[in-house]
Length: 83
Image (cartoon, rainbow, N blue to C red; front, side):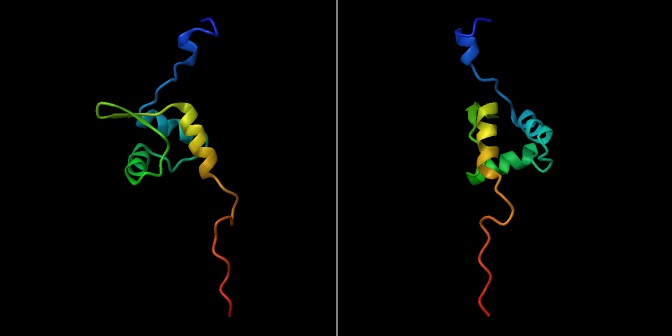
């Protein structure tokens, strides 16, 4: 395939099960298809697209979500209460 062809820019679409497998291969064992469904309903999951009733994910969107979601331990915790 020529690098400038339109096929080179076309994303590889993953359904929810494949997107969950993608995340699990990267060590996120808690990310299941059901987790992604619930995250989408709550509005805090990875960007996805719809084709009819099917949710489709681009690997780039999963990578961006993963990068934005993982934070160093302790970041975002409340400061200790004063005695």
